[in-house]
Length: 287
Image (cartoon, rainbow, N blue to C red; front, side):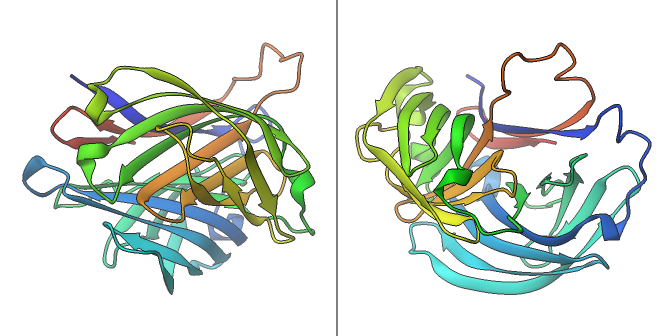
């Protein structure tokens, strides 16, 4: 059985931005990132690690980062470092991996420069990962930045072990005042043999600080998506990233929905996708 456990898509160019040529200066300033990596020795995923935090690009090909790193079943630990990047005229980005020394990520910068999506496509040892960064708020943020209807996805490896891998599609309704009025979950887990399950999260809440970082609590009612997470909200409030504070190596991505009415041209343009796929024995990457 083959099932997709996680995928992300970004718009690279639309009618206005299509002819614009990019360079290193196009990627500058502070972003928030989450990266999830799964190591697959001898065709079988054995352990996972993830990291999340702030990454700042200098516009000249170098970056610094700081945040938290989780490996296997271990607790999160503070991490910081530096790396390099290069932006091609078409928006393709090569950057050194924050989570794995000596490895590079192949990524793409979105047309609005709010999102950077990438993956490690050249790893020689069957390591698969996914990386996403969103631009940090430039002005003081608050709970009001996270408001409206969001669609999202989560991929989690409990205790860093593939045997319990679980993924979920999410519908989130954020009040703008620290509460999720609805969290609907639909997904599957490895121990359910791919059977889809629908669940609801009750009494979910969040808190956003002035810098756009925060926390969210999703209780214990939904097996596929629960617990405490550190979250990051983009400068325009349209994108949310997150990861669990304990018990799982995971990634959460959510995007704000279109305001009605949705124009027929809403999906026009060139897109890139990053996807991790589990076939019952191993993970593979499409990018």
